[in-house]
Length: 78
Image (cartoon, rainbow, N blue to C red):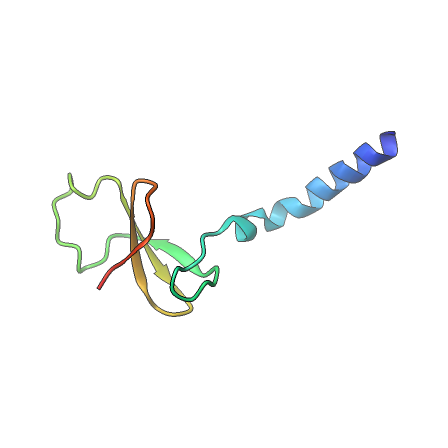
């Protein structure tokens, strides 16, 4: 009985360093886990109040830019 708990604890300790990569968001256009959050792009010339809950992402694989308002879906920026 104790051995099965120790196997679970050992597995949890070994998987912990890989969790950020496994939980990283996928790019909607190329389906790769290469999205990085960035500061607001130069193309966004809105007031600070309107951008309060907007997060911007850039895909390293396909160089696409995305934005997300609050916890909504990723929207491609033209």
